[in-house]
Image (cartoon, rainbow, N blue to C red; front, side, top):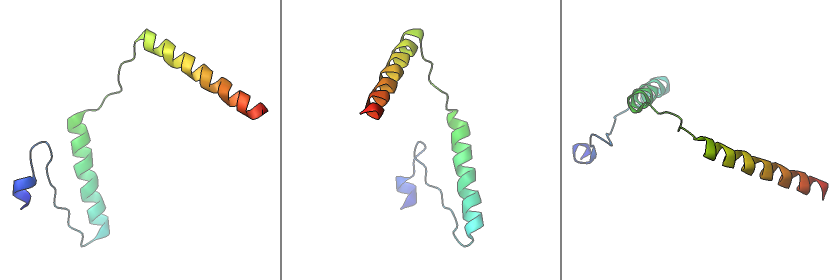
Length: 70
């Protein structure tokens, strides 16, 4: 059953649950290996997008200030 649903891009991992500490270590090892293989990176933000974000931050801050004075 598992061999039919486990794929390269969505593999199944059997984690023994006899000892909670070992289950946690095994799960952590699988997650760490997967994250290292994915090599996640923060997205690159260009100057125009940074300016938009700064403007939105100012607007949100001013909304908070307006709500506090009401």
